[in-house]
Image 1 (tube, rainbow, N blue to C red):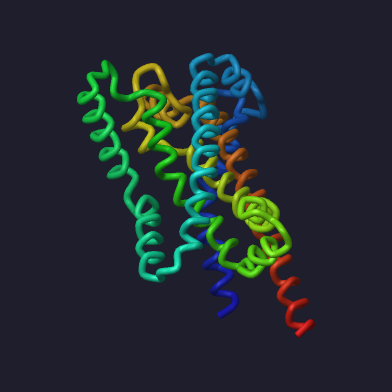
Image 2 (image 1 turned 60 degrees about the vertical axis):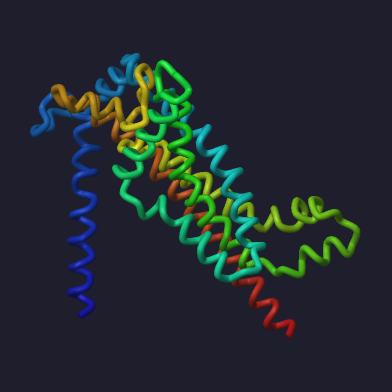
Length: 275
């Protein structure tokens, strides 16, 4: 049974990562061939750095992802605090369900519905162009927000509720108790939520495609336009960079979650030994 499970896991990982490995290898190919590896070279990365349109798309993606991350992190943290303070269990369940809808809803449905809403509102106000950077920003905040709430809310639920009251008994104002007691406990969840929001915003294509306006292309949209023409290893080099950036952010998020879980276990052991 153990041997069969190992074989099964190996096949699954090979199926998942084989295309990525091929992409990484051929991004360093010396020739244009997409089937024969002629030798190691960095020329496709050099050509990528000289591609102004791609660099401009990268700048747009970073600007959009950073803005969406900042807004969704602030709003998501505030929403998590509000949901945690609700007394009605039924109302909490309703809010959690509403929060989960953007995550479970297909991206194409979200993208089309947001596009129709933006066009409708734009026509009401007589705007010449209904889709632009701001519509993309609103769309990205919409689908990033639930992930921030999902990361912050468990940290609040794990926290001892008496700490806030104890801080107020010692002379803190409600805001002072929040920033001195609750906020430090939420920091790991806030950081993890921000990393997830940045990664999702940076990689998103479907929703960005439907809500983008003329003159503002993100990196995924740029890659899509490149695939309509002849596929070159320059696109492989771009995908390799995105892969490593995303993987680094996910590893940081996992390290933070692991460290936070370890501290939580140690705290519970101390509480049990103290009782």
